[in-house]
Image (cartoon, rainbow, N blue to C red):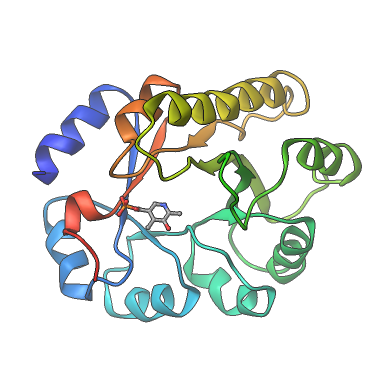
Length: 218
Ligand SMILES: *Cc1c(COP(=O)(O)O)cnc(C)c1O
């Protein structure tokens, strides 16, 4: 799809586009940057760092893949948002490594919504318990900006819709309750090349799109 067309459609709906450049060369990022795109997503810390170094400073880099705790420290200076915070241990590592940083790190809590087995993400109940017990309000360099989820990779749009809807329901519940006094909690990241239209219908305001923009990956 043409970038311009997608970008316009999303802008009209108030949806932020994260262009997922994983496995694609820096030139592919540059080409989209020239058209005005500033937000890019990567799923491996090393690849994000390598591209960040080569590309313009004003790119906003989002980490969207599972992150090992021993990679956090190196990643923090160059990342603006970590969308894949999928466990209390990773959260605490980010808090610890962000101490003394001269910027705020935005994070999204990743929730397991796929009915098919998936490895990463909080279960809904575990996330609620975490937010009740963790002193996340205390002053730190971390901003909890919302939730991220991935639907099952299936043709069944009824199922995909149901999964997205469950994340929207949880998002609304947390926003009204746990985060009611906390203005940063406003992002619901769901939807990829194959299902972003469904995700937006179900309330997404951030989509992560790779193959539709850059072509299929090998
Ligand atoms: C690869 C990836 C995407 C983009 O997938 P496409 O189907 O190529 O749009 C989105 N989110 C995550 C977490 C990914 O790993």
